[in-house]
Length: 191
Image (tube, rainbow, N blue to C red; front, top):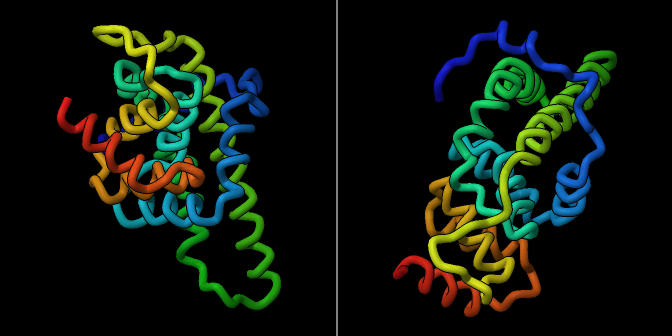
């Protein structure tokens, strides 16, 4: 991970960010899935993945947008906020023990609330930049692509292990049969 200049944060117009945007609403809906929530947290904690970027990849998929040409710009746009605000709040929350006496217990709850607000701002930054990303354009038109295809394409951009990719898609589309997901993953890996 490359380091960013904390002074870059001063250039953010946080007051003008659309906090309650369609991406945020999508993420709240996805977060209701306990299995998806657990897997996203595991990918964050064990593999250094950014949950908001994975959620954005999912949202792009349901919008039939290709995140790949825009991923580096989206990372660059949100990196300073993530590195200097979100990550330190997460670290502070994680290093505090589970069982704490009052008022330290309240402190941990406040840090967690601040972390959630910081995540929402990060999502607003991503959303604002995503508005400039064009609808999916592939080398040859793919009219038969559905959300499963777009999930495979967009989540693959995060260089997930195949097992993690499969589980993430399965948790995102729980009504899809596992065999259908695997067959489509195989089809895309051969393309």
